Amino acid sequence: MTTTQHPPPYPPPDPPHGHGHGHSPGDAHGHGPSGEHGQGARGGHGHGPSGHGHSHSHSHGPAAPVSRHLRRVIAAILIPFTAAVVVGLVVLWPGGVPSHKRTGVGFDRQTQQATVTRVVEVDCKSVNASGDTPTGDTSTAEGSSAQQQSAGTCKKATVRVDTGMDQGRTFTEIVQPDQSRQLHQGEKVVVAYEPSAPRDLQYSVADVNRKVPMALLAGIFAIAVVVVGRMRGVMALIALAVSFLVLSLFILPAILQGSNPLLVAVVGSSAIMLIALYMCHGLSARTSVAVLGTLVSLSLIGVLGSLFIGWAALTGNTDDNTGLIHGLYPGIDMSGLLLAGVIIGSLGVLDDVTVTQTSAVWELHEANPSMGWRGLYRAGIRIGRDHIASVVNTLVLAYAGAALPLLLLFSIAQSSVVTVADSELVAEEIVRTLVGSIGLVASVPVTTALAALVVSADRSDRSAAPAAVPARGGRGRRRRH
Image 1 (cartoon, rainbow, N blue to C red):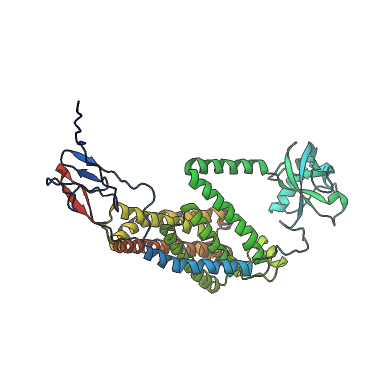
Image 2 (image 1 turned 90 degrees about the vertical axis):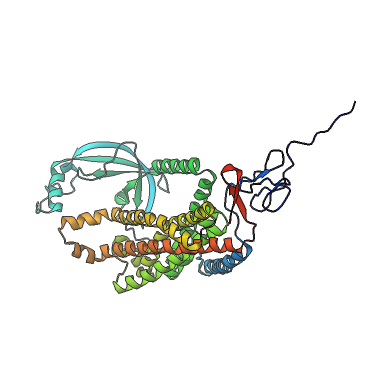
């Protein structure tokens, strides 16, 4: 009994070449030996003499790496820049926060944790030190408040110190009826300690202990980022932690040590930018273009900020906190500190804009590889215009929200818009907002142009064979990459 071996109905497919083209035995256009047309699109369809042979080679995930020449060009720019950032970190790295004698004012106080153990209501007259009814001009806020306190019901709170050398010690706190913060039994609070004061007055309630709600909110945020972002979300959280470490271990101590705030901000922001972008988006040409766009925009913000802060004679010393800093460390350049804040504050939004624009151009190129750099730029800038409108509005509203109490004070005083804008308090916020916004607006065309040039130059550098795409009726038409 003989067994007849029949040829397989489908010829074995050739291994995929280049961009996933499927080739049938025959010429380079995919023609079979009998003259059938083979389709060499991304699907890799090859037609044999007896049927259809399919050789699929789809490329999912990130875009293909750029050519070696472009990688060398990008590396020639970024490697020296990264080396300069590392050198700057080493040279400017502080030995720690310089010590000073505590003033007991504002945040510069010794604090301990405590618990409110008892709260009772008492007549305000009984706890008035002089026993007399307060007098004064009731048309003023102070006089009116004094009259209300003398006639109202106060609270007498007993507070127990839970940490420090005086753990277990109790003291009494009188809460006036018009105080915005009222104490409740069992509430966790933060108390200020002044060792030079009389023993009965050494401790006072400074704030409420918010560790539990703040930790819970941070946990919800982290879970939301990981659930939605998955591995990228994890990397984003790690990058966020690294950013805070650079801020707390390098930028703030270096400024307090007397280093130039602008130089420290540039080096620190560059380090945060490199770590965050490459950690979140990977070591690729796409990320490198976003880094270059961010760097150019930050440079523009630094130049404009330095020019207009000096021209507008902004000192950076406009409130109690900056006044306290200047009093403790007179050597700090407060106007330079203001400029450093502008640069650091703009970095986060800049990262978002540059990464988005770079990704948009890359995806446009993947969708239509035949598009030149001018077409890519025009398409990318149309996307960028929408991004500009939303980001600038977001930035302005963010600064307005932060300065809302100040704006309310000007509204109460019925000051004109010109008067309000001319005051240093508001002028600082205006310069901060407008300089940052100009940098954001400029980042869109700059990053889009860089990305378009990179992907179009990469396309022309490649020597891949032309490929055909599927057409109706099984006919193949060629499309260049």
